[in-house]
Image (tube, rainbow, N blue to C red; front, side):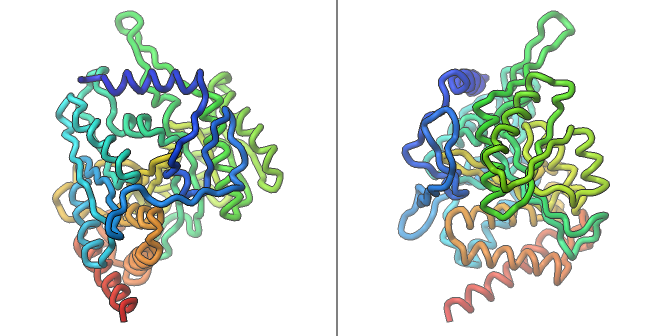
Length: 399
């Protein structure tokens, strides 16, 4: 079984590049973002927005796949369960643990089946401990198998957290399924390893259109393409060229581009020059971590993964946090924000708004901060404060 999913991914990747995109009968993931799947090889305008209900909904309740992952993932998931239980959130979780020490892909395949059945997932970072080239990253496999082609990270400052820059408000749009993460590596001769970076017009086009559509719908003024086309002239050159082509179709949105190394320096020195940023896969990982570091660290922001049919929500920096697991000091805010994203996606707007208000009050008003933010609070201190707020909101809505 080892490597089976990887071979399927590469075959699917090749077929997509050659044969183009196919329409989904029941769009789910991008539908909630207002993006329309089309059968043509190039995207059309998303003027006709699709509104679809989540797939698994029984008796007024939603079923969502839960992938606890490794490190602090299981304890963060338990906090989400507690908040949802006390607040009466109509969501049931189908938990699928994945053993990081097991080279078999059975757990992974069941997790993918579960997400396909339910349509959405809440996910911790899944460890892949094996160094064997036949055992692929579980995180990458999930994104590839479900065609979660875009990752969105909304990076905003928290007034209650002291950081070098205030009032940061940047949206990172990351290509999520190719680039260096295509996992095409081989040892051509002993001691020489070659890694194939895959960039396609197809995937570059749809992530670029996502970024510009997002900017248009949310009143953003500028999209910046991040690349390294001065060195990788064919691969990053293609990505940059496609972004420039798409930009011409959005005359009301300013477009510029920046080389990745200069981008990192500019983020540290003057992050306010950025609005929406779109980039290939690896650069998205780098930029996301840089911005999270600027505003307070890895424990705050959430990341959203979207495809035409499915959506997966997870902490923004995709860290396992194994060193602090089980110590009651992990910051639960990033997972709480992921849960709020999930609730918004399920159209449970009241609960989504209440949870965001609870997070805001806990961090910015009550200033209950875990050690990573310079505070003395425990994980449970944060969770209890959120639960108290959510319970009050729930009771007030019933009265």
